[in-house]
Structure formats: structure tokens, C-alpha cells
Image 1 (spheres, rainbow, N blue to C red):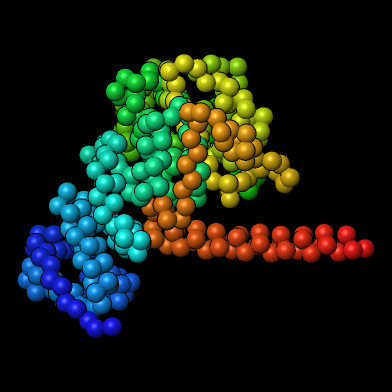
Image 2 (image 1 turned 90 degrees about the horizontal axis):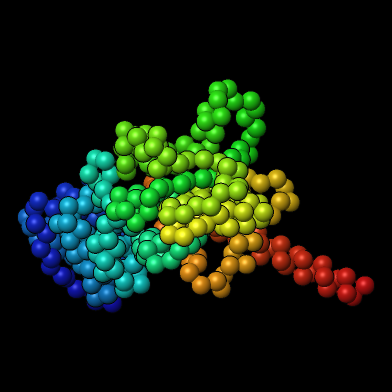
Length: 337
């Protein structure tokens, strides 16, 4: 194919942000789209095939606009813009960026960063119960917390309740010293971390003392009716079917419930069925309940985390396929004998 050259204007004040340290982002765009990028003052010359240069121009335009809006361009932004460019959907990244949920205590805007996260946030706005299911690093808990704090501050709900099963992640911790709160705090630390970052430690502690914010193990939910509350159940893959049913039947009037979990990281005893898996099958067709599935493409932690999640997904997919083949072969042998 013949090469073409396209020119693009890049204002000097946005050049460092869009190029990245040591031009890392430009090199990634060049390698991924198989183009050459030459910078002259405020002009970018992009050389490659017709389709590849068009994609590169579009990616740069999206990144420049993100920079104009005051965003610090991260490697995740570049990776996601490139992945959308392969589907000719790169312009959607600006629609995602326009949805600001709230701001952290430092003034940093909290926004969905992928289409999957945007669908998740929209589902929380439009449904009473939302299941956010996906791998680590996809923002399931953090975005739910941001939506909860926003609803609390605006007066949509009168309190926030966060809970998770107190199950050790594959290791026995033994006896933990201190009072009851000290014993359960280690299991609930990820929820505290998100609250501190968005709300601030002082505001969180004041509201917690008033009983307006509650962080408790799932076992404490039994026998309660939770009205006018924003309720988050984290690590739902570690619930039993009985626990999940108990939790879902606590919901009162004016409440909104977000249930997050990763079906691939269960810490239940061997042979124990997950309440999250059962809920998927039982509640799939119930109105006002939404299931949002996030994938490795929605991981917003370090890019290496995305690669790790994808590698595990591929491995587990191959293992499941191998198991099915073995089972079908065994079934055929049994019938023949």
C-alpha cells in the first residue's frame, strides 16, 4: 500500500501531556498503528497507510481534547484510545470523560474511564439494584462508592451502608486482638480507603459517629430493614446463597443497592457455591435489577494489571474448554461401554 502524510496541529502547552515522558505515548501509537510521527514546532506529521494515519490522527485529536479539558494523560488513556480506534469508536472516549460523578478531597474529578464503566455508572443511576461483576482493577467498588457519596451529599439518601463478607483471602489469620471493630476493620479496609479519598477522613468520621455512614460485616445485616439508604455489598463472590438472599431481602423503600464481585476470585471453602453465581441465574430477568459485566478492557490500574487479568482469562478459558472436552469424551466412552 502507498504511504500518505497527514498534518495535525498540536499546541505547545499540550505537547508534553500528549507525548508522555520520553515520548512514550507517541512511540506506543507509532508501534500499535504502524505509523511514523514527526514533530515540528506545533505541527505533527503522521506517515503511514491511509487507514492507519486516519486512526492515528483521530487518536491524537482525542488525547489533545482530553488535555484541553484539564486531564493528565495516563498510559491507560492512550491504551484505551488505541483499542477503541481499532473499532473506529475512539470518539466515544470524550463522551466518557464528560461524565463527572464527584470530586475527591484533593479536587480531582472522579469519572468513568471506559465504556464498560460508563455503562455501569448509568445502570446505577437508572436501577434500584445493580450487580457490578468483573476482575480486579475495573473500578467496581470505587465508582459505586463515588455514586453513593454523591447521592448522600445531594440528599437522595439519608445514609450510606457498606458491607462485605468477613472471609480470609486464602490464609488463616488466627486470633486478632482488640474489640469487635478492630477485628473486622482489616476486612473492610478497601472500603475505608475509598471513603477517605473521596470524602476525607474528618468528614467520614463525623458522619460515622452520627450513624449516617456505616461499614459493617455482612453478618450484621440479618434482621434489619434498610430504608432510604445507599447500600454497597463488596466482594459478593464470597457470599453463600443464604447470605445473598438474606442481604437482598433487607432492602427497604427509597434505597439503592450495588453488589460488586469477581467470580474468578472466590475464597469460599472447596465445594461451596457462591451466592453471586446463584443470584445471576435467579435474578437475571427481574425488572429494575441490572447486571453489568466489566472485563480486562475496563481495568484502570497499572497497564500490567490489565495484562495479568487478560492472561488469567485466556488460561481459564482454555482450561474450561479442556475440561469440557474431557467430560464429553468420558460421557461417550460410558455410553459405548
